[in-house]
Length: 159
Image (tube, rainbow, N blue to C red; front, side, top):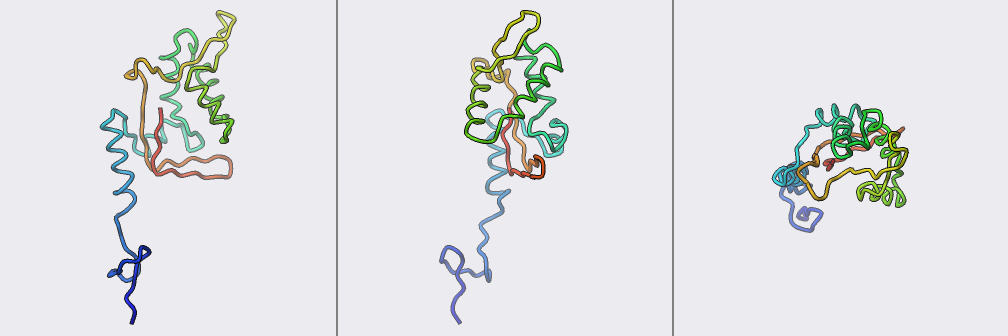
């Protein structure tokens, strides 16, 4: 009888599949640990879901509302204005043009109309000069529903 071999050509004493360890143990947990060591906050799946406000949102709405107000004094001065910005972010298309638009948001090139000043002002999502005021989160088993599509990511980095 020929010796059983695994997918890599080595003998397989287990009778069919070689086990190198689970994905959670070999990939997810080390990534989460490294992110935490770098100062990111880990969010268990249920906490991330709560902060998102449901599976139909890919954004930590509760966190982003606070951050938008914190980083944009006099520009995003209400929850309604923050929610308007979040709605614009969620509408960014998942293609190369959407990537460019997301980059413009991250660089502070997108604007918001400030009624009191009757003009547009740049919007800040991240403070590159004071990283300690930014909010960085890592979540695992992240489930997102977009129309009829269910997307599940093993690990997601969120700001």
